[in-house]
Every structure is written in structure tokens, then in C-alpha cells.
Length: 270
Image (cartoon, rainbow, N blue to C red):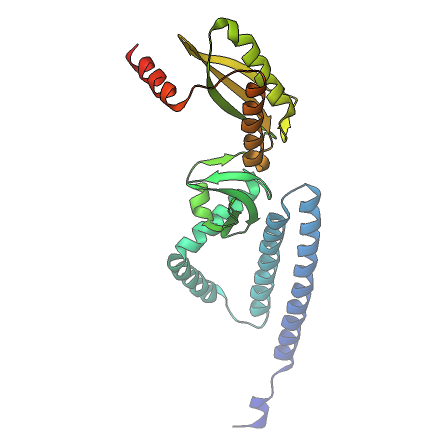
């Protein structure tokens, strides 16, 4: 073998140099494209995690196009290479279809924003505060400080209840008291006072009291109040305690357990 055959020709060297320049320029262009895309998407108030994901997709697209262009420059036909990569991608996709489903669901969650960090939500049978929204999993923290990790596909495939989205929730406390029509006014006034002074209860909208049912010698009164979803347990506790204290101060008696059972039976047979 002659030495000249081992030495690359000038055209080959130029092709290799051009390919290296294309690769270098593509690497720089991909970084610039990533930064520009992140800044532009963040200015549209898109979720930061989703903005970074879309910018990363753009970056890798630029890198892939650069790689294919550099291979073509040195005379390597990429048609077969692209076919092999596509086949490998299909095989990997079938093997990881569960993870890809979670990934696609994560993108949908970030895009449609059914809930945000700090919201109190119920997803399936799980309830808690949203601690993290990832591309594969959503993490909740329960009221008992339990960490709940839910695959994103399970999040989007079922109903989602967002307790925080509207700002306030309405809770209700129903009490059965002894009395007749003449006792209705004092009992309702006592419950209104309870709603006004209970800690954690909003005053706009104001707490309200309704007569929800009645029998001979008993009245069913329902006290409704609004509160922050995150403070639900404490607010409802305060509301119940205030209701008992105000009724007692007003001389309004609750029906005892035996009376209440008889009262409920009489409703069922009426």
C-alpha cells in the first residue's frame, strides 16, 4: 500500500473541517436557541418548568439537525442512520410507554394549569397540598404530613378537585336544638354571633344561618361560613366550638343523643 493512499486528500480534510465547524456552530446555536426560547416563553407567563421543557426540545432539534448536516458534509448518507434511529426510538417508546404517558400527562398538567403549587386538591382518593409538579409525577402532602407521589397519567385520567382555585370554601355545621317557633330567633342570632367571632372564618361573604328542618319540639339549624381551603380543619373546629358556646350562652339547648335518635326515627316514619 502506497503512503499516498493513507494520507487524506485535501477535499476530505476540507470536508472534515467543515463538519467540525458545523458541529461547533450548532452547539453554540442550540445554547442560544435554548436561552432565547426560555426568556421568550417566560415573558408569556408560561409555567417555568414547561418553558424549560419546550426550550430543551428546540435545543435538541437544533443539535440533531446540525449532526445530520455535518454527516452529510463528510459524505456519510444519513438516510439509513435516521431509519435506524427511528426504529430504535420506536422500540424504546414501546418499552417505556408507561413513562412516556406520564411524561405527556405532565406536559398537559403544566400547560393547562388545573392546579398550582400550594393548592389544596383531591386527585382520585388522595387529598393534600401540591408540593411539586414534575414531568412524570405530581407530589402532594397530606394533612398528616404524608408525602403522596402520583403518576401524572393517573392525575389526568380522573377527576381533579381543586379546593383553592376559587379562593374560599363554604362549610356547614348543622345542629338540632330543642324549641319551637318562638325559640327560632334567639337560636339563629346565637349562631350568627358564632360565625362572626370564629377564628379563620371569612366575613365577606358573611356567615349565614338557615332553618333546614323542623319537628314538633326541635329545630334543625345550619350555620354556613367561608374559609381558606388550607385552613379548613382549624376553621371548622373554631366554628363548631363558637356555635356551642353561643348557644349555651343564649340558653338554647341541643337535643341529647337519645332525643336525637327518637327525633330522627320520627322523621323517617312521618
